[in-house]
Structures are given as structure tokens and as C-alpha cells.
Figure 1 (cartoon, rainbow, N blue to C red):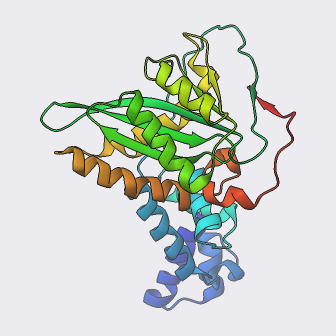
Figure 2: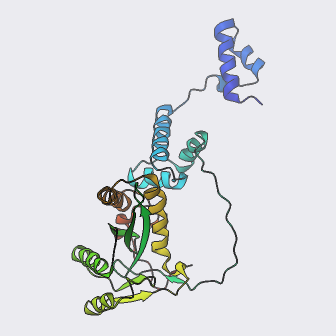
Figure 3: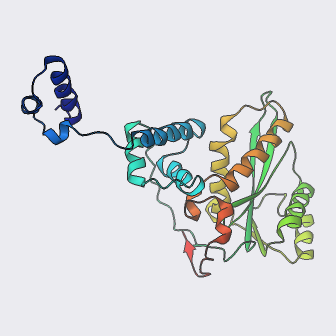
Length: 283
């Protein structure tokens, strides 16, 4: 079936080249005179939206429509309607392939409490990757569970308990101390050094049950973002290069990257939003 826009083009071509009346051309191609005389509006603005979408999906290849729209609306402050942006997004065929999910039957985990405010509870976890020459390095990720703000990405070949404590002290200097810190049962976290440090600062250490990473869901989800949108996009030649990229990406994540978990705004914006109820839970 030929679209009305294509039939309008054919009718206009017939009028221009064959010099036939407009009414006859409209009858021949099955369109109204209103359709024939229709002029596209906001074409320049639609082109600008298309340019932004192509730029975002090229720079951040894992972003779908939701992340792109949140970035344009909440970070760049464009007032474009989401239906309009989605229509252009689909016309550009930018839809990401949806991977089928494996359905596994598992016992329902305990509800994960939603923090009441900033510095109520932090989460931390390790990640591993390799340099271009094959040497392995580690990353210590620390986030605030309330607004999902990344507080630190410590990078080195080895990160013992002393480095974990040093990194926590550095964050506390500019942000203040948390009431709780959640982690898994890694040797760096269950060490006597960290236990003594936490007792000295009146901070409660909360450990998840072995084999239940969903109990540390906030930082596990953050790790997936770090892996997919940063680590897997580059091949690093030195540990200094990793640290430099980590600093740049962490600033972008906190200040410009929309986060669906906090309403589609960057984590830094969450500080000004209403504090959630202490009884709220997520599963």
C-alpha cells in the first residue's frame, strides 16, 4: 500500500511536469486537496531530535529509548513530548534487540529496604578486569543506596583491607559518615581491621548471606552499568589510564547520566527530591 505522503509527492510531480489541474491530480492519486497542500511543520526541530538520538546511541551504545529521553528531558531540559521523540527514534530504527530472559524458579528473597536519606546506607563491592597486556586489576565501587550516587571507584592491582579503609576515610571527609555499610563476605570486608575501624566510627557493617548477591542489589546493578557502559567499551594500556577514565566516567554517571531507579534524573539531582518513606521496600 502506498503511503499518503508518497501519493502526495506523485500528485505534485504530475502537476509540475504534466501541467494537469490540482483537483484532477488529487482524484487520480486518491488524496484530498488538503493533503496535497500540506506542508511539513517543525521539520528543523525533528532533525535536531534525530541528531541528538543518533549522537546518544552512538556514544552510549547500551542506551535504549528511555535513557535517551530522560537525558534530553531531565539533563538537557528539552520540552519535547515523549511520543514525538519515540516516533523519531523508531523511524531511525534505533530500537535495541531484546534478548530473551531465562526464567529460573528461585525462592523469593527478603525485601531490600529502601534507605531513608543520604548516608543512611552505603554499598561496596569489587570488580575485576584486565589491561591490554593481560595483567589483572581490581576496582572497589562504593555507592550511596539512597540516590545511587557513585562515591568512589578505587583502582589498583591489589586492594587489601587497608586500601578499603583509606578509601572510606577519603569519602567520609567530604560527604560525612554513613550509618551502615553493606557488602558481601569477602576477606577484605570481614577482616579485623575493618571491624575495628567501623566500631571506632560507630558504623554498622551489614553482610549479605553467602550465595545471595541479590541482597546487595544496589551495587550489583551499579556494577553492571560500570561494566556495560564503561569497562567493556575500552582497552586500557596502564593502571593510570584506568584511573583517569574512572574519574571522568564517575562524574558523568553522577551529574549527567539519567538513572531510572531515581526517576530518570542523574543521582546528584535526587538530593533535592522528597525523601522516601522508611517503610518502603523493593524486591
